[in-house]
Length: 173
Image (cartoon, rainbow, N blue to C red; front, side):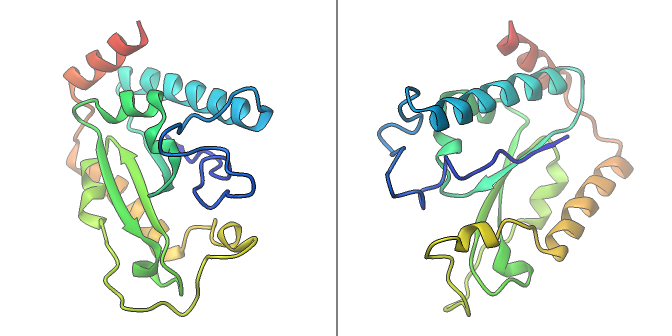
């Protein structure tokens, strides 16, 4: 199961006005946009924990510098042993810009596809109004790697560990 929460509210590029910060990654829930995004994440985390407790593999994506990764509910999920944080930069998959993404997953095979950019320059920048939105679709090569990692996982027969399933159930309780 894959989840990719809408990142606009969690983006560090959202600066006018600034609605989240490192000191307050959850923002002010009196603002509807913040309340809605945070409520969506809380629901997503509960669903992911439920899926993991039943033995399902999961995958969550957001940009590397997203405030999503600092929200309490996500930190609880990230802290479970048996989940992997994998960084994959889109420019390593053919895009003309650098867009570092983080994937949280129960799939250990995805770690083989981790790619960090070491390019000195990029043809395009994601700075400026609307540029980050244009980079939302995943590059084809990245999609192929994601699929390959799950095909390899299936072939290996690796399942979600009983301990991770138990831990996920405990967090839900």
